[in-house]
Length: 378
Image (spheres, rainbow, N blue to C red):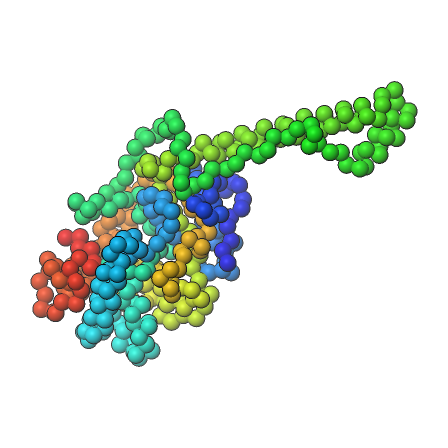
C-alpha cells in the first residue's frame, strides 16, 4: 500500500500531471523549501508503509526497471554471466571472507549470501535484477544532475539547454499526462436547493414577479458564480499544464520516491518483504566497500523477475537543472571523487577489479568476474 501526496501546494510546488499510465503525481518544485517539504510529506503519509527511498534520473522513462531488463535481447546472456559471477565469488574463500559472509549468523544461508553479492555487483555497475536507491535526497539530486559519459568514463555536469527560456511549444509527454480541463457549466446544469425553491414560491405570492421569473433570475445569478469558478479552475489547469515541458530536453532532473517494504523481518540490513528484498548496503556489506557508504546506498530486488517497481513509486519530483546546481553547490561530499572513490581508497572496488577478467589491475588472484562485469573508471 502506497499513499500518494494529494495536496496542491508545498511552498510553491504544484502537481503538473501524473506519470505514465499510473496515478503517480508529478510535482514541479521551485525552491529547496518546496523540495524538502514535499519529501517530508511523502515520508510522513507513508510512515506506516515502509521506508521512502530516492532515485535520481536525468530523464523520465516509462518505468523503473533493473539494469538487466534494459536490454531484453541479451537478458539471458547477462543472467548467465550474473549467476556465474555470484557462484564464483561464493566459491572463493578469501573473497567470501572479505564480503563478510563467513559470519556465524549467516554462514550457510545461501539466499542471504547470494543477495549480498548481487547487491554489491549492482552497486559497482554490473547488470543485475536489482535497482539502486539512496536514502538521502541530496545524493539523488546529484545523480539526476550528473550524466555518465561513456567516452570520458566520467560523470559530467548537465547543461540547461534552454538557458532559462521556456520552449515556445509545449510538447505532449508520453510519460507525464496533462490535466484535463473541467466541463464548462451551462444554465441548464444549474439547480436550486429545495429550500430556496420553497422560499421563492412563498415570495411570489406577494410579489409582482412570477415564481418562474424568480427561479430564472436565481439560476442566472448562480450560473454567473459557477462560470467564474470554472474560469478560475481552467486558469489553474492551464498554468499547471504549461509547466510540463518536453521531457526529451535536458532542462530538468527527476526524483523518484519509492516506498520500500521494510515493515518486515530483517537481518544485517536485508529486509525480507512480501514481494521484494530490500538491502541497506551499509549494513549488509563491510565498510571496506566504501562506495555504498559514500552514496547512502540501498538496492531493491523483486522476488520475481517480473516485479513491477512502478507500483511502489509514491511521487515523482521534477527539478530544474539550474536550481539543482544552486542547491547542491560545490561541496566535497557532493562530488564524483566522494561518490566514486578509486580502487586505491575503496578496498571493495579493488577486490572486485582484481578478480575481473581484462582488468587494468594486475592480480595474483584467479579470475572470478567476466570482462566488463563491473564498471572500471580507470
